[in-house]
Length: 98
Image 1: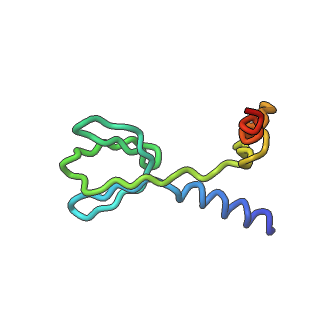
Image 2: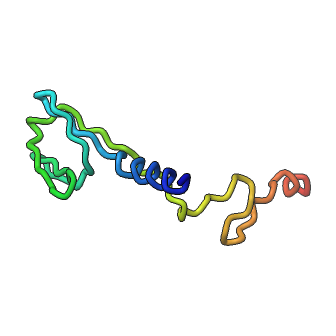
């Protein structure tokens, strides 16, 4: 039962994250930004792609995508990266030799 609840919560969180388009008349539309031109904005709402004229739009807010579990973790600063590149050597020792 707990597994079902966790899966439902994750699905809702993924589905609830969307870009927000606020129209000048006060209507708010949640969907996924699909592109646009200098005159239009395309937003996928449910299974349909709707086109809005920019003169009707007050604001467009983008929601960043949630990090996925398969995304690689970047190496921490000062550690060698995945390619095995060592951090730069301290140049103080080379100046002492001069």
